[in-house]
Image (cartoon, rainbow, N blue to C red):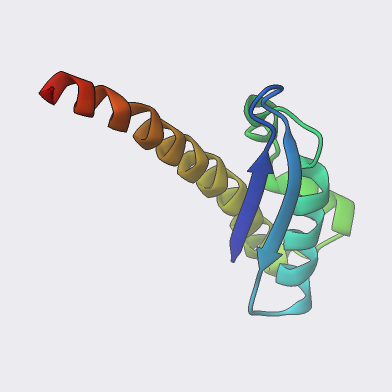
Length: 100
């Protein structure tokens, strides 16, 4: 399960999200709900989305709870990846100026 986010740099809000999931219907539904729930929210706010909320919203049976866990993990991974890329872009000019 992969989740991609697009963030407005000025507001820090997630303006768009998309996913790629291979798996059962519960996994696909969990991914879809995750993308809808992160849109329009701040980065810190989406980290509070829990798999139990997704599972309850979709009425997932206990045997399918792992699908909602994958969605929660995908949200966290997308935010972490965004922050890492942003930090890398911010660090690159400083490294160049330090070498000059």
